Length: 429
Image 1 (cartoon, rainbow, N blue to C red):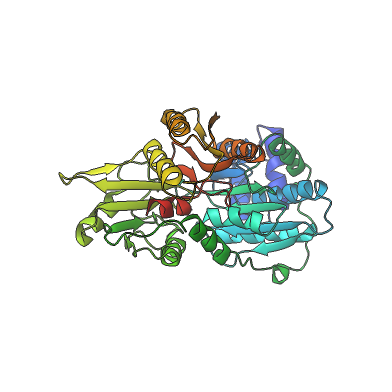
Image 2: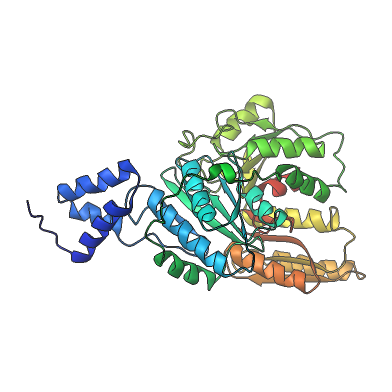
C-alpha cells in the first residue's frame, strides 16, 4: 500500500528515526504512527528538533526528534563528546556524569556514558541518584573536562533534561552552545555498536569532599543553645540524604522531614508542579510544621539546586520569603557574621532583575568597614551569566561572598560554580 505523505522532509525524518532508534518501544511507536498515516502527530514529534542551548537540553520525554529519549540523548552525547575531544590536548579526557530520580534518568546517564567511553574518555559515573550541586562540585574536584547531569530540576514529571558543565565547573556560554549543536548535527548516526564498557567507569568519591567544603564554609559559626524546630521538604526530589548528612557533619540539630515528600518519587504525587515558587508548594510542609511544632521551613527543589524559606509569624500565619529576601539575609550573614566577616576584597552580585538593595548594602559595608574593599556587580539573568561574572571578579582578586538570582538560586561557595540549594540551606541554619 502506498502512503500519501504530505511532506518529503517529514518522511525522511520518520525513516531515519526508524533506522537509527534502538529502543524497541519508541521505534515501534513511530512506525505505528506511520502505518496509521498520523502525520499531524508525527509532525509534532519530529519537528522542530530538540534544541541544544547553554543549559543543554530540556524537553518532554517521548518518541521523536523533538523529545527527550534514548536516541536524542545518544546523538547529543556523541556530538558533545566529539566537540570536547577536539578542544582538549589530553589523550584521555575526563567526563563526570550524574543523574536524578526522574523517569529514564538512569538510562539516559548510561547512554551518555557509553558515548563518552567510545570516544576515549575516562568516565566517572555516579552509581546512584545525586543532587545537581554535587555534580557541579565534582567537575572541579575531579578536574574533569566536561560534566553532564541528567535532570529537569523542578519541571513537571513528563520532562527530563541534560545539563552540561564545562571544565571550569560552570554552565557553558556562547559560542560553545552553537558549536556543540553543530557537532551534534555532524554525529547523528549512531556510532558502531561496541560491547558495553560500563564496567570500565570509575565511581566518583566526592561526597565527603563536598560535605567538607560545606563544613569549612560554616566553620566560624557556632550553633546556638536554643534553636527553633525546622521542617525540611525535598519536594519528592533527591536532596534529603545529602542535606541530612550536611546537617550531621556541621553538628546542627536534625531537621524534621516532610514524610510525604522526603523520598525521591518521579511521579511527584503531592507536588505536580514541584517548584518552591509555585502556589501550594509548601502545603505539605505546613501540615508537618503544625504536627511537630516547627516555626521554620526549609525547602529544596527536586534536584536541590534551589532553596526556599518560610517562617511562622506571631499571628500563626506563614510568610514565604522571596528569592531577593533570602539573598539579602544570606549576604548579611556571610559578610557580617559568617565566613567573610574579616575578609578583604569582597564581591557580591546578582542579576538585573534582582534587588538593588544588595548594592546599597555593599556601599554601607564600604563605609562601615573602612579597612575592607567591597564591590557590587549585576549581570544578565540566568545563572550561567552569574557564575561567569563571579569568575571574572575572582580573577580580579575579589572573594565572592554571594551570587544570587531572585528565582531562588544562590551560590554561597565558589567550590560549586552553580546555584547550590544545599549550601544555601546550611548557611540559613
